[in-house]
Image (cartoon, rainbow, N blue to C red; front, top):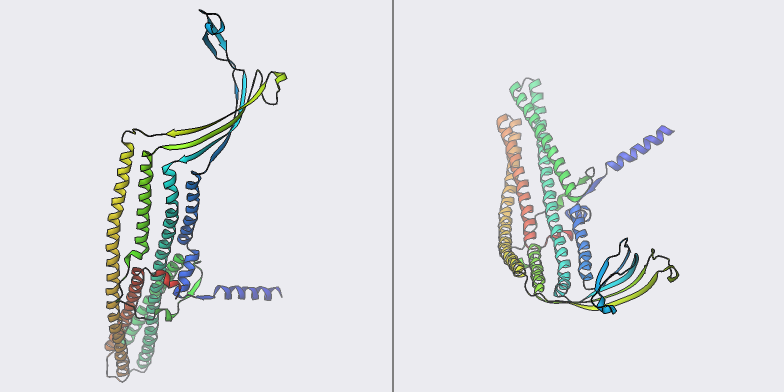
Length: 445
């Protein structure tokens, strides 16, 4: 009975492990955005930006601290004073002021009233949050692009494997026919040997392609953040050639890469203003309240009867700081900030040019790929017809084995060229969607 139960459990486990996950492009992209480390880290950076904003805001709030001290003076400092103040002119009096022990406990407050750098920091807080949000969006788009490209690579390699499987099936049939003819003395041994070599070569190519499929699938699953042991299946409907709108003009200023640079430019503007704030005076309010105990013994828990006396004192004040001359240090910092702004303006122009080029190249690649797909599809159909006719002619003795093998090679090449053209089209399609700033639309299909 125990063996039966164990066998049943093993069967269930094997069935679970053999379960295949059907993966559309939308599924792959959505899974990656939820599970890949890059996407998770981007979200954490957005969350961390909120903490950075809170840090900046804290500078505008009151700064309150408590303090305490316990001091022992084994030797009290002697002060020399003029005796005239004590009715003994012409004499000098040495007096020791203070007690052997003193302890102070208090609370202090500092509140910025006017500090230009604090005000600029508060204005920059919103831009900081937006910068990290745009950066997270860019990270997601880059992840989507990588996953989509890897997804299509897997499909094409699988298609190549299908081509080899079909060719292996056809070649095996030819081999069986030739073997039957050879056994009956109607075919030459060299023809049988050539077909055996052909079958062996196809098997070798098939094994290499199987390895390539496994490696590419593992790469795709890694990009998605999916467990490598997961078995996946890609439906062929994901690779239909759909028309693209090539006449519209892409708005480069909406691209995430451009928006990120613009937001960085805004932050550098605030950085410059923050440096310029060093030219302005600062004003702050300070206040403190303290309680002090002094006496010949440690003051804690002691009373006047022990010679220890406690008293309190407080202070309130305004601190004004007016910069007059800083050795041209502030001016140098301002010029550095200006230099960074000029540099990012150059980056913006270069990025805009690069994004325009990317869009135009994607359109050109789409157009060329469509032409190539149509040509290669017709070529593959023609190669299939040639192989069918050649195979019939070979069976009837009207064509040589060389003609048949050549026809098979041409069909494989034509079918592989078609799948390669399809891959080029899909990669160009991803590039075109990216150049329009619409990669997130792949999660909606």
